[in-house]
Amino acid sequence: MKTLEFTYHIKDIQKVAEAVLSHLHTKTVLFNGDMGAGKTTFINALLKAMNSNDEASSPTFSIVNEYRLADDKVYHFDFYRIESIEEAYNFGIEDYLNSDHWLFMEWSERIEDLVPEAHQTLTITDLQEGKRTIKLTI
Image (cartoon, rainbow, N blue to C red; front, top):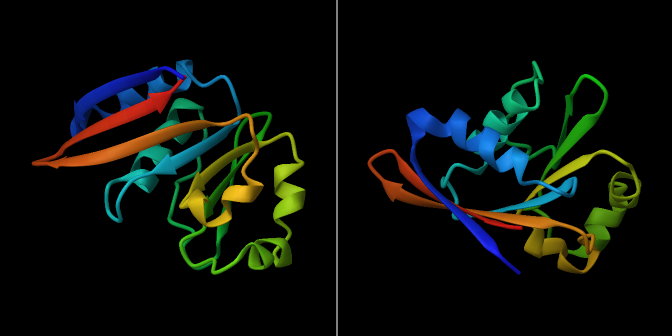
């Protein structure tokens, strides 16, 4: 498994999102990083790179947010509050996983056994002073 690394200042996030988008070869992307690292902020930049007019917000309490694309959808999950795989089944995770839409997953390790095999992982590290590093599996 290869990894691409991008180090950037937050003011350049849109350029990095466009570069990352060009390297996505699956519609399932796992977003890793500490609380406050900028996962949802980066998802918002990716949505703009995908020409969505929607604004990303953290689905911590709703578990999933849906964003519109011209001819597709993005389902943005935040599994931080999920205590068990059974909870994921209770809100219908299977329907989302079996869809042909984009799946952006934060805190996916909480449902690790359900994560599709075909996925890419994006890990964000906050370097402080407005700088971040992203590592993307390709």
